[in-house]
Image (cartoon, rainbow, N blue to C red):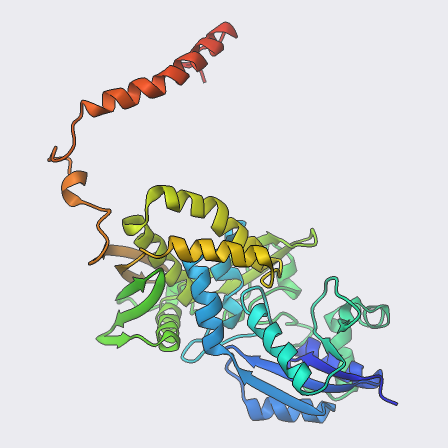
Length: 410
């Protein structure tokens, strides 16, 4: 007798293919769900593999536009960053496309759209449980095999999964020599002193092998969102086409590689290697646009409050929370006047800004900023500014003197 019907978040990789077979062996009926967030896959082959292993049904949903417009572009508006790594790098790189979109397992930025759609499919298919291949604390309606003793005692790691896959005739591309996914961790990557193998990078070519000809592009932002890309005499305004074109440009130039050691939510340090060409380019362009058109005090508050907290919430899987919604409303407000055009150059692993302008925003005034003009500015005014600040700082100097110290000393 079946223990119930499970909707499994399935990628077709080693972990979820093994979990699919294990759930069937445990007596569950399984409906597989896969989110198309841009990965270049043979969908007929994915369906055939799930059926071969024993799934009742394979549901694949196209979530590319939803993913890019609701999550990736919001991360750009936010200049999202977790620790030393831009969230735009470390959590999007697994879901970007090259000529199309390319992707792999679900991480921070893609989780919300994947989870939301999986729950819809589970309801439509009359499932009793949902399941996934990730670790972490769940509840009694989530079957997470990596947290079930019967599973993790049997499968200590990926080598055990590979042995099981071989026994059950489950086709997988991972090997014991190369157990890592094409972006992430495991295997040789677990030694942080060793460089990642070159064939691990899938979204960028080696910068040393990139073309000797730089590529100049122009990106337009409206309310902080990228709305137009001009590159190689072509113009892109559709969000997916724009994103795909930037990925292709960035890949050819070797832009967007990152190799970091990050702190996981559960307290462990983990080494990760990611490549995210489109998001790397967009983030730099957006940061530069803000320098021209965003009020300085608003930008400072956004950086301290919105950027940090939004990034933390996404990284820790707390997208569906009132605090994320509150923070995001603040972000949208802050981006109302981020309307600008940024020109950039892509070349051999680097991207840099050539210039920026805005037809609508007037915070920057060349006459005011000029070192050769005193229009609308009197140097005498700075005297009051200096005197006011000196009131407090003189008292600080006196306190130091009482301690036998001088501000002239290091």
